Amino acid sequence: MLFRPAAEADLDRLLGCVVDESISWAHPDRLLSFLESRNYRYDRIWLAEENGEILARAVWWGFAGEERPLALDCVYVHPSVEDRVGLAGELLRHAHAAFGRTPEYHVFVSNGWREDPKASAAIAWRWEAAGRAGLTEELERLRYAWTPGSPVPEPSDRLVFRGDDDDEVFVDAFRQVAEGTLDFHTRQALMTMDPVEQAREDVRDNRSMRGDRSWWRLAYDKSGDLVGVALPSANDAGPVVGYLGVVPAHRGRGYVDELLGEITRFHAERGVPGIMADTDAGNVPMARAFERAGYENVSVRLVLSADPGAA
Ligand SMILES: CC(C)(COP(=O)(O)OP(=O)(O)OC[C@H]1O[C@@H](n2cnc3c(N)ncnc32)[C@H](O)[C@@H]1OP(=O)(O)O)[C@@H](O)C(=O)NCCC(=O)NCCS
Image (tube, rainbow, N blue to C red; front, side, top):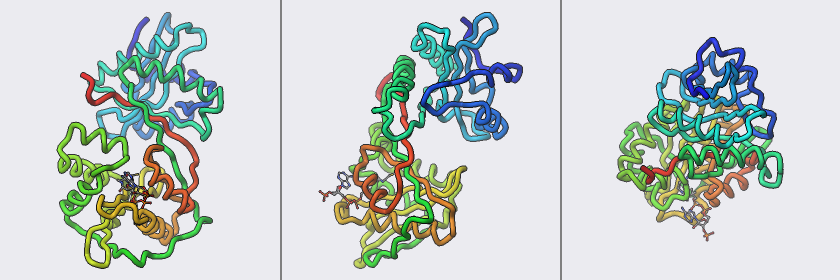
């Protein structure tokens, strides 16, 4: 078996890999459009090949123009392969060694995938294969969508929202909001990073999104106390909630509804066709706030990542 990155000459055979399972995958249209936009690249597609036939294919997604692949998008194994877990696991290990890192694996499934035998079977063997390649941490992210038919919330009468050009003011607010967070990635980052450094990285990541920096808001109560942050933003697919959070001293008072309301109203007033948002299934206060605000849970993203504590 030969494990190698793909090359342009493989294109026809890459397009011939078909995943006939209930799971998101790099189908021909997606492959062609992402190769064109440079979110996929031949050197970020890895193949297991025998006698000129592709027996397994793994496809990673990355920002165009960035060297490092950000997430594994699709794992395919030819139906004739008996040990698909073993082959896929080995393919991922070869690619990780070449990348010098272990990018997360992201898979979209529909709601209720656990009760759907086809969807759970499609996920089960991929999970096992990914686990053998070091992706052992599991996370379920809920994807929410707001559409213009849903209600637009009234402005808050408890909070005052203000922008601030100084990133360090947001770094300090992010640091406070991250305390006691239920968000998996923030908790993971705080296991290995200093809180200020973690907040600074989060501010940088939010800045690299497509939303305008001038949209960012800090929320204060009537006595001038910082209550939280609200960052409407956008990604390649359109407007997103971005980030919001309440500082620990003000949690449990329903302020989350007003921060989310501010973001929803901001986008709605611009006449956007919809707003997307993701949160961890384990971040129950956040998920409930989306549901109260008329956001609909449209799909689930499963994320597998490497244990930051592992060597
Ligand atoms: C998620 C978050 C915004 C909720 O804010 P909030 O205004 O406190 O939410 P609510 O007032 O609706 O709280 C509902 C309940 O959840 C509890 N709760 C809220 N945040 C909590 C947390 N981080 N840990 C444990 N419990 C929490 C509240 O105490 C309250 O409990 P109660 O019903 O027993 O009184 C806040 O936890 C937060 O800022 N977290 C960190 C940042 C974050 O996760 N942002 C979302 C990223 S997508």
